[in-house]
Amino acid sequence: IAVANGFLIVGTCGLALWLWSRGQISVGAITLATGLVIRIHNMSGWIMWTVNGIFEDIGSVQDGMQTISQPVLVQDAPDAVPLQVTHGQVQFEHIHFHYGKRGGVIAGLDLQVRAGEKIGLVGPSGAGKSTLVNVLLRLYDLEQGRILIDGQDIAQVTQESLRGQIGLVTQDTSLLHRSIRDNLLYGRPQASDAQMLEAVRKARA
Image 1 (cartoon, one colour):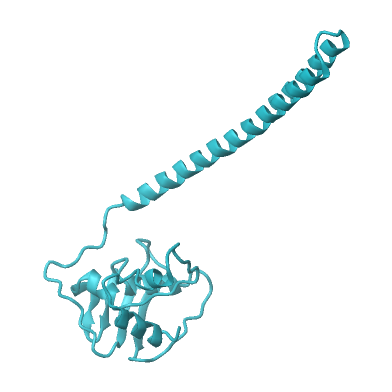
Image 2 (tube, rainbow, N blue to C red):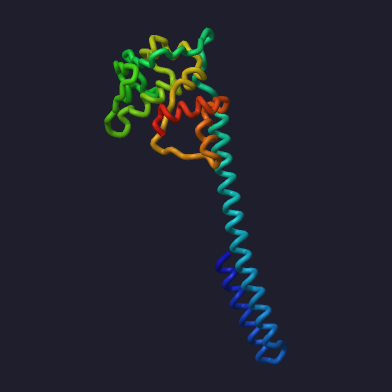
């Protein structure tokens, strides 16, 4: 497009000057023709930019649809009950998870986090830090072992109640283009203002 526009401008200006030199057009006609060609050049650039943006958006929508249409791999147990949190103690009992591979990631991990206790997980990339959080949220089912919250196996409670009791702040946080209140209530839109303010206080925000 840029090359074609270049030829169009040069050709139009050259033809206009040649016709002017023969006395067939006036200086005003040259000015008008040159202005129109430059306008066409600018419009074609805008059109290409818009079309490129449209196709980028189409690709984003297609990728998003593929993500949304993925089958649900983790199902609630037939007799799953809501999680009842009284203290908040978390216990990992000899858990194994390898993303379907033969080994690696998490193998035979035992860990107890007492209520109110703060811990830090340190290790190189791929050591399983994020995976540990993912299995706690039950985004994946364990291959062996179990995770208990206040003595309740998370595989035997509903996923909605489990995730409703866990607050997660990722390392790549972002805000929706909404009010701060809407962002705070994103996970529990039905919560009252008093509950929202209590959550803010607990988070020391």
